[in-house]
Image (cartoon, rainbow, N blue to C red):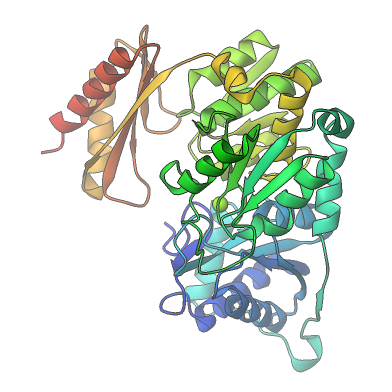
Length: 447
Ligand code: MG
């Protein structure tokens, strides 16, 4: 059982738990296992430079060479690692508030490190088994640039002429995070009329909270309305997630943009394998069915989806939170290509984004949660399974019960003493009924 790592790396308050000493020891443990040349990069948090120097020192001390790729999106680092390096460490706390920071550790494919490797790293860390080298074997550190290549590779994968010809008005809100040197330049190179908001990197995140939720994007929505823009894009702190605002200033939920890009990818490639999680909308499966696609469902988590995409040679995948994965480019949620692909869809169809979203299958969902002690979680799941033998049940992650109205999934949280309950149906009433049913099932066995 892992003690330090969460769903993607380590995330803590900077300089209290995540100190330079801690970062250096973890990096040395990682370097002891991975070896070779390791790329490091960061988001613009106030603590990122400090942590990066510590991570670099830790890696050098176990004989790794270190390439500093500077401030950049997590997917740009993942692109670089997959192509050129043996591993990577991204210093970021993703969408968390400014006082946090973290380490996202990557394998040689640029995918977040798997559980077994993280367990080995923890064993080295807690046992102080880092293999420090003698003075003449200490690694070398140098700087390199990957951002220009990353941007070029994004542009190669879309119809740049079609986007240019559409003369789109675009607003970009990087939240002062890691996309400041990528997304605005991609949009400009695609010939769009660009307005930027929060596109100066700033670790205090003065413009907005780094998480791209509707509540945090009210300024962006006002700017879309005031400028008459066709579309706007917002990212989280490390720019792996992409959220859109349509031309009416409406927030587009991540499952909608996922479905939109899925449809375009399937049409472009005449079908393919789509990977997502058991908690993602049925709209994804509907679109796959209509467009010669095959759907593969995994446990919840972007790393699981990325790894599955690699294993099955998938075409496209993602999650409902605005994380889109293009496995021929980056084995992780990518913001650059997500932005360019959505611009291509709007340009080529000639339709406003709101209309494109309206044309997608519609489902309604409800989300609830309830406290449940960690030692009770397995018992509750077991009892719910016993009680639902008459239904179609999927146990990929928690218990997903499917009936003719829709589905409800009941999942214990991996990090908190809670159960999550999430339903989806064709009508709001059915979604409500299903979530209530799920909550009743959990409550029945709580005490
Ligand atoms: Mg992120």
